[in-house]
Image (cartoon, each protein chain N blue to C red):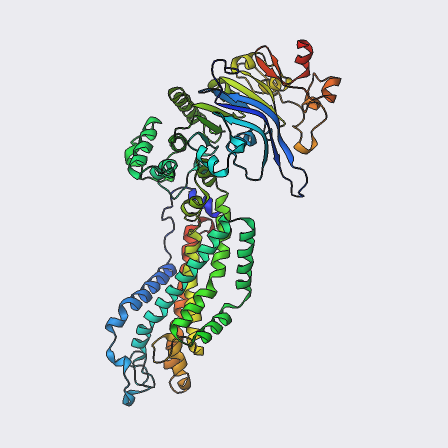
Length: 328
Length: 285
């Protein structure tokens, strides 16, 4: 729940900005702009936004995957600031404390390595013996419902179906017993039925292991079914952050409202699908004031002049002048 | 289609039937390999001694390809020479591939300046005509088969290094490499366990073609006199030894020449066949 009341959060991100250097060597491009968020132990958080809103970059920043990206701020993970670690120390965190799975289960797996070796690799590189690593790989594959896992340790990825492959990918991520799993659109490449299975599985695993999940997606249906909390990103900033039911029932930010309205509903006859007018601004051409103001039907003068701060609004956090006015 | 996606697609099945021509090429390559490995055991000892009374005999039932100026059977000398020629070529290709693979891996994995440095070195290697350089090296080390092999090994690697480094860079962009990195795999292990194995398949095609080419270059070096020396049955040396008889006893020159040509063409075609079969988008003809 928001923000974890009882215990210290697992991850606490403070003032995180990500700049990508430009070819000219001038100032970098600010892709993620000064965001704060935290994730509690075992919490399932969805990060949603359009393509280019900075959600994947945020996730990759937490893992420090882009060597060229300039990161500033703090990423506190169990009391240590990940941004101050050396690359070698960071490598130790990857896979064993924080794991990540990507969109496409087809290409996540090395086509020339057996499933058993791939799942065991995370353990092997940490000095765990072959036999023990295999045993633990097998038990994770079993846990994730890979049929006849023992016989299939020697199989290659192409011998598996898409859904099974996604299970193997999850097994690779989970075998190191991470506390946080970052899932970057893990279901987008799958058909709806398999998508559902994978979500159920994630749900199961996260409950059983007390695993926190940061789920990155643009599919609001998936968010509603899986996450406890949702963070909405727009143009490199978090514009709304709150309990998933509250946000869906009563979105506070006009952008969130637009997003939810844009999801077609089967129980309503529509002449035309709704779309938020305009397009998100490019990082080098953000408008003055609130980055959403040119597309916002509720924008007023202050929106065009002043960047709204992220402020608490009835148990949520919202960055919108509409609510600031009410609150003030 | 990129090599990587071709690899990660559906299981590769034997989809294309072999055409009669492909079959012929493969049979020819097998015959050449068998001759190289087992042939010398069946060759009569007389091919290493001279029998002047029987010299320069035209092809007949007893001597299929005739005899040379020393009265030695040309056919059996070719069979014996196949071992020298093919074995040396395999050795050369293996050696320079090892150099090429090492340089490519270091270049692809290393920092930008190292990559640049190694690739410029490769450019220099590519710019120099390898046959002339090999000739120089072999001559400097003293003409022998060993010098020719070493010279060719140290001049042959640039194409392999350049090609493989490009493919490895491409493979490094794959999701499974990013995936392994996300799980904490170190850069060196990433390169050797994931990137290299997934980049090598293109080289297999190149190897087949390279053997054919190496056979030709080795025979040329021996012909010029910096490679194998007479009385070695090596093909180039054989041609060099017999070139004085080309007008009186054509078989002494044409037969080993044909052996060089057929072998290098056969391995080149084998490379093409492998390439077509592993890349369905080329349509299989």
